[in-house]
Length: 359
Image 1 (cartoon, rainbow, N blue to C red):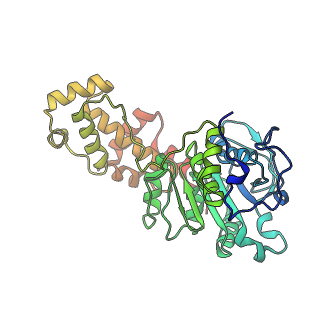
Image 2 (cartoon, helix red, strand yellow):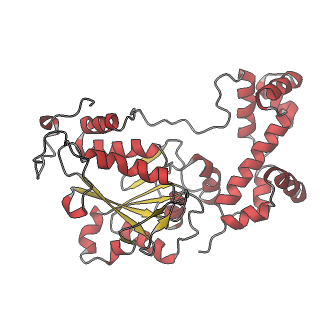
């Protein structure tokens, strides 16, 4: 058993109103508490096809924190209709109530400032989100509630108009589409952003660090570190590095420079000789290095990067096929469509239809 926080090490500014009769830490399994038994409750709205990994990483630090002698955290799982939700891995999860229950409760005006709602989604984040759900988000925001969104859920919050003035962190694959749809919102390269009553993050394993940060804010670093040790998670500073393709540290320096040039110029499609000049390498030598590393020429690799970017934009936003094509440097739509079909075995219009959602 790793070293854990002793009872007298709890911050004095947070005395326990209900001292636990259990030895410290509790020898039994960490309790799953009801909202009326816990000091803090997190409401979690599960959007169909949500990420199960994100949900587990969100809740496990809270569950384990309850082991350390106090009744700290509870959670309620919500869905739009109060019915079970199927995750992206096909697992069906029962929920506790409808999302609208947060605002239908008596005394909402008095309790909303203490409400905490985290939205968890992944694929097709708005396919099952309508006017009623967005109205709930706006009403919660108007009453000062704490709102969060993980993975692709920042799209849901942004479309509800509750992220204005806040930096936004989300899954790196969704950044191009988000930037195109919400150019007025600042995108953060960090794994999560916590500004006032808004919390956004990339989801997945980064949710552990996000919850440990919440635990630390409430009860101090000793408890957060103890929870991290208990779940065998090494805490660290939130990384500001963006997720990048081709992160092999063994790649030659000129290849890394060439990739950076390509990624910085997806919209204008530089000629390969210009890429080579900016990378400081001859075209012949750079081609040899690319073939050794990727089995592709620099031209093929650059085209693939541009098409991958277009696919992410089409799949995650409302942009048209022509906008996506022009956004990655194609001046002829027919050329873009042929190249796209060769790479993804479907027309870009098919991908675009999956990205469209009704207001």
